[in-house]
Image (cartoon, rainbow, N blue to C red; front, side, top):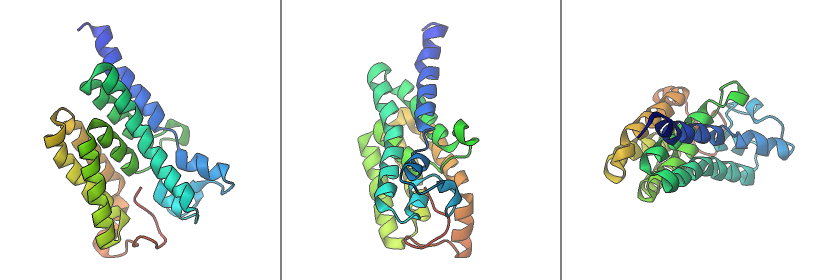
Length: 204
């Protein structure tokens, strides 16, 4: 493969994934609904958990779905067009775009929903496993952040079984999700992290 096709096959999916991932649906939806700037609510995060703090569950659900889709869509498209490796590049770009959107001064979300989207795009079994783990842990412990962190970690491990070609990148994305949750981890350790339904900074 010559240099130009190689660049197009990997750089282009990453850039497209980044641009799609950087769309701040939480901010756009809350503004469209007349709820103001979501960055001035709760944790200041643009993800679904913080949107829920506006009291609008439908907007929070829409944010969760759209943040997942913006990770899922480029992975599916590039996997269909060019195969698994370009799809992995698109996956990495989408999560990075959500976390570091240039339009918001590179201050984006924590990447849980978008990571779940890309995992589902890489392997529906991997996505289903990760989502199931999140639901079970959230129901058992009532901590959104704990459920997110552990499900993403388990997803990274499961990636070696379901989609080995993507596993190294999935592990790096999982590490980024953990880094972005550093304040949640600190609160979990000292017992001040709010449970689901309580107010404070969130996980998504």
